[in-house]
Image 1 (cartoon, rainbow, N blue to C red):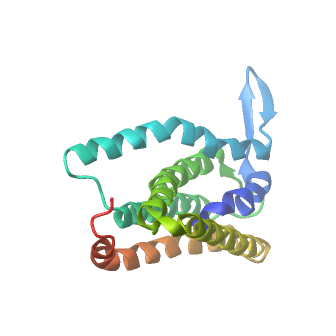
Image 2 (cartoon, rainbow, N blue to C red):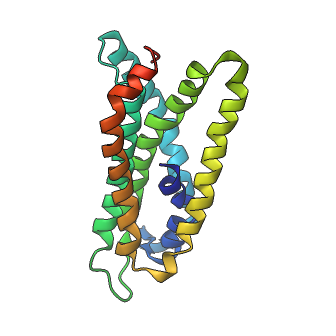
Length: 199
């Protein structure tokens, strides 16, 4: 998840600069939105959606329908795959000076954020709940170490951008989360058993 999510700080930022139509017209004057401004989209959606997701989980919990932690992770994979699927659709058939509309990237960031809200706070909570008390700090460090490794892998994949077409570049971040979600789907029941009722 984090490997494809962190493309937003690397390859997607370059794509915003080079391949995104960032020109808007305001009162007859053209204004080009700086590519770096798109880095604010994810935090904006986090602030907007975090209270909503929190309420959704609480509401589902009250009626006994709260998805398990592995199920929430699986949903996170679906959201991020959908986001990259949007970018894949937007990039198919582009040629020459053609550019992608801004709303495609904003829509992708919305889906990324929804995935992040299904995984990040849930995962942090999971580590603290499942860790033996003496090892909480150590295992929280392992969680962040995994994030760091994913960031390194994200940087490697971003480096391949110049060797691929945009549609090729977006294909793997679309397919890999789907594959991961299918694997997780097969493992949900045993994982839930191993968690001994922790939610």
